[in-house]
Length: 153
Image 1 (cartoon, helix red, strand yellow):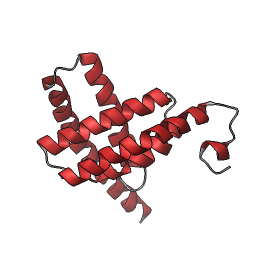
Image 2 (cartoon, helix red, strand yellow):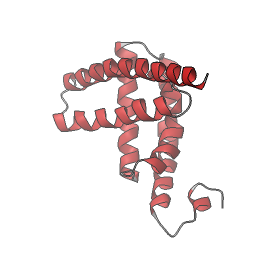
Image 3 (cartoon, rainbow, N blue to C red):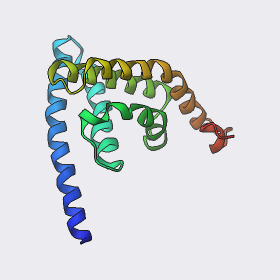
């Protein structure tokens, strides 16, 4: 039975990743049409790819991009800080910018989320980004205990 569950999981992951490939290609073209440099486009693609193909796919349960927009807070405010070796306050900000652009593209190109959901996403980023960046700073600062980093102490 466990083999069947794992096979079903792997099939679901593969389907989501195939769809994500298409979404990322659309996003890349959308960014190019906006006149961004190749370096900037690649930065945004890498940021969004990590969110889509690592966080949403492997952080139980596998989630499609269309349903992942409301997970940005737990991604940037927790998972990214703990799991990405390159995380820093600047990288948290960069990730927030990339995800905001990605979902703007998805709103325009695929209608994956509606205007009110996109507004909710941008408001969350605007309101929470300073705290996410501060958490990242505390996490990198060895003088803080784990409890203090996450606001438990």
